[in-house]
Length: 114
Image (cartoon, rainbow, N blue to C red):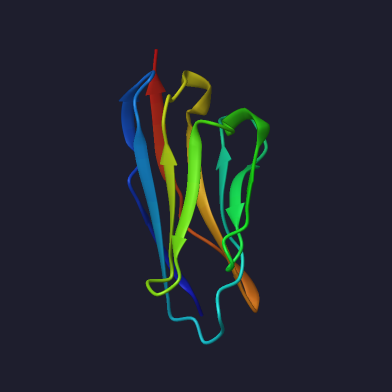
């Protein structure tokens, strides 16, 4: 069973920055793709960015050029650096990892005020 611990959410003004972290533990298998999703009130959960074990990345169009996903394989940790935040980035952000099975974090709230 993989446990995911997220941190770094909070309240920030528009134009500000936040860095999310998600640390995985308890995995018996190598962690493959790591990803960040988000869900705003009344909306479906959507992919924000993902990164393969080899470092290939993929971003939602809405965050390209503003967000950067990275990972530290030695620490089983994925990061999301969020710059130039906008009110529409407000959501609960979830970490998701694939390690034989698919695991989700508990979510961390990001609120961007205008």
